Amino acid sequence: MEIHILVYRETELTQARRADIRHRILEAARGLVAAGGFGAVQMSDVARAADVATGTLYRHFPAKPLLFAEVFRIAAGAEVEHVRAIAEAPGEPGSRLTGAILQFTRRAARGRRLAYSLIAEPVDPAIEAERLMFRRAYDTVFRRLIQEGMDAGVFFSEDPSVASASIVGALAEALVGPLAPESGLDAEAVEARAHAMAAFCLRALAARRPAPSSQLPAS
Amino acid sequence: MEIHILVYRETELTQARRADIRHRILEAARGLVAAGGFGAVQMSDVARAADVATGTLYRHFPAKPLLFAEVFRIAAGAEVEHVRAIAEAPGEPGSRLTGAILQFTRRAARGRRLAYSLIAEPVDPAIEAERLMFRRAYDTVFRRLIQEGMDAGVFFSEDPSVASASIVGALAEALVGPLAPESGLDAEAVEARAHAMAAFCLRALAARRPAPSSQLPAS
DNA sequence: CAAAAAAGTGAATGGAGATTCATATCTTGG
DNA sequence: CCAAGATATGAATCTCCATTCACTTTTTTG
Image (cartoon, rainbow over all chains, first blue to last red; front, side):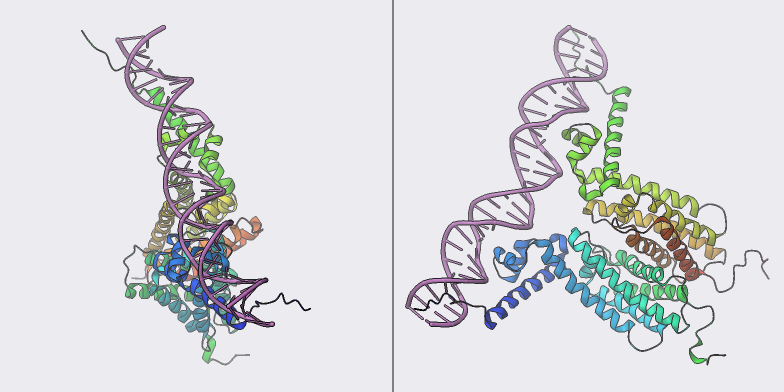
């Protein structure tokens, strides 16, 4: 007399469906954030956009801030990746720094609303925590690049961590104004500012002697 | 047959009392913000701290965000003033820039919690608007200083507005980490960072030729 | 002192929106 | 097709606080 009490079990199909819904929720939320910022989105909006019921959201995320923290993480992670790719590409540190700054700026200039949300929009503390990690990620990218430049003798800095933080801050600040949803700065002007910023940073990091790139060590 | 319907009229004493209460409310609110940040304070707390009833708050301020916007404005204004004083003092632009950066940093290092609230705490949009003005005020201070330095031939910048924004951003960023309520950086370390930051900015702004301060124009 | 006008009081109200949960629907292996 | 386990649903609930307002107290002048 066997008793079978296991009739339902998690299966590949089930898991896939689950993952799919989760994904749809995140996508919907990202879309809404990109359109109106974190502050404007409420759970019922997300549900509608993802075409699920409000309660379903809570079957996939324990609470609103956690859902949005994940949205932030994904969006921010993508941004950092793009910048990192350029910062770590082969080439001369100076031009890579310029390239990274331009890349950051150009991507921000498209998707302004999202960039503003990631960089400056007032947000819930849980999301703010993600933002700190986001900034730290950029900081790391620039710090490595600076270190590399110093090793190569083309950069100088008495404290690379201050230099990298300064660059991240400068990027954020010099762009907050231009990217604020109200500001009407066009893409060209933003690009010009990015170039000026890159020049500013390069001068701050320049080693005394012109880059010895094409010179053989004298010793 | 005269009819006297005016019996009560606003008087100096009344006005003084009114101003006093208003002031007490602002002070109480400022104290609470300095202790725990904007986010943690609620109207009933302010009332208790100011020793008035909740309703009284609304007799002096139309709504919470307006009350706190004023708190922000006052606190931030004081900070800017201190920095401006140094930036505008007589002396060589380079050392004034260094002085301003150090001043900013030192004041932030005391009253960390307040500095964090002014610079980085996630806040209500109405307060965020004040923050933008706060940053713009710093921006103006530095822009003027940069312009002056350029006129004197000791600074160079292809776009002073980008340079000033970068400095403001660098200040905020290089200090947000160190000032975050959790961070355990001591005053000495913060001071060292400030010096590094000043050096970074000075290099970014240095005119090619060493300052011609003590030279007579060649022409 | 009285009447008029303000200001003060703080318990009650109200609204916004996140979260819950009783119910309905779906999935799975036998 | 069934029973059991999961999941989806969305209207109702709940919570948190800012804000209000009926009532009390204070202030002023005649």
